[in-house]
Length: 172
Image 1 (cartoon, rainbow, N blue to C red):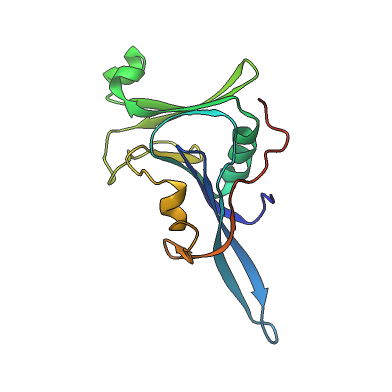
Image 2 (cartoon, rainbow, N blue to C red):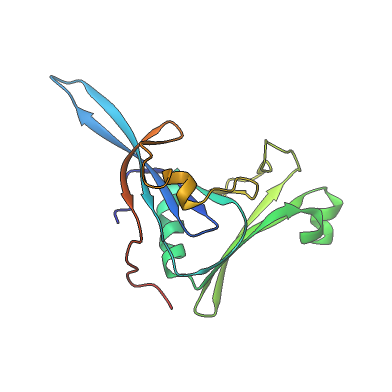
């Protein structure tokens, strides 16, 4: 799978991924238009997924996070909470959460700090870290694809669906 032209990617707890892409299409003369579309993959990773809902991977970080997910043996996400942080973060009222990728014994841990503002199912982020954890946005492959008959996901046209995509270079 190409990891170019990504505007966002959604990694769901059942292992499927929805990639949102854009492509600039040249029209007559010097005019162009931007085509936005979705590409769906039923099984993106063999990693054990230890989170609920979905993780939204933002534009400039999406490709790197998807590569980590492909190589990971376990992916964990924790919702920002006061109890997860240190004494310093608790004293300042900051909630700490993280996104972790376990890679053959090593762990890549990406923190998120929140002031606790609820933005409709997820917490606001104080610093930009390339992802948003949305534990209450639960969706299965069957729901995303409407059992293979969907033509759109949210407002994006579904360009391609990849059911049961083969795993390549993934840790067992």
